[in-house]
Image 1 (cartoon, rainbow, N blue to C red):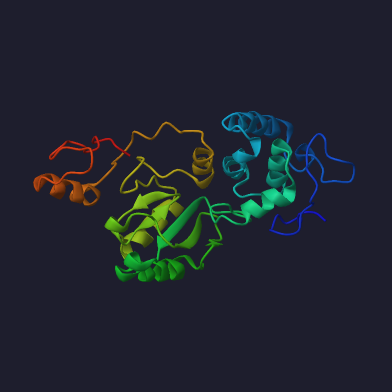
Image 2: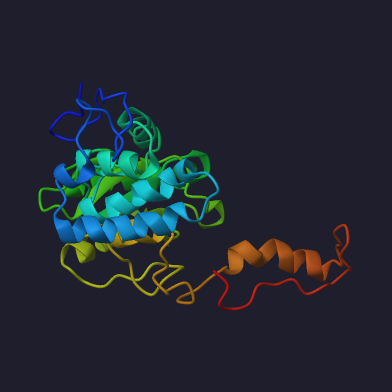
Length: 262
């Protein structure tokens, strides 16, 4: 059995893939769809990932982001490449790739727009934002616009409840959104404009670029933009005003992050 040619999740070979693979197992990654230059670049980056861990297979998560940064999703070639580099089966790679929602098994848009519809964001208008975007873009959850620009998602939590309702674009924060502001953001992205998130880097990068960052290759933009905002720091400010302490700390101790904290 093999991964389906379309790259969708499916049955995969149970045997290890790589230089020591037995005859009749899945072919090496180089023959699975990557050209020589791309393969050489991927192999060098994969070696850097593997070197971070005492057990090579621990590098699977960032390596999946790495192949996503090249293909725009976890392709058949990407699964075979990861299996070869880590000495595990393609089935093991596919099992992980289909478990986590950040790994896409079909071509993703240039921008992943995720609208939080979990409890607090829903109460504050998250469902209305998602519904407006869905109608405006003509796509539903985990669907991509015809121009390949936007993949729309419902997100269970963006970990930014103090700014609800929150939308993320390639995991950059857009706080305190409304249906109108959210559609304006997507329109600007589709028009090719540079769009700045509420917090974080100065501009939103592409899905492929962010995938490379998630693979552990910094883009040197961590110092940009606003870090912790006032809603996040409000509790600390109130605690300081009231002289509250914590174990091992003194009343009024200055633990406020710097202005450029991310």
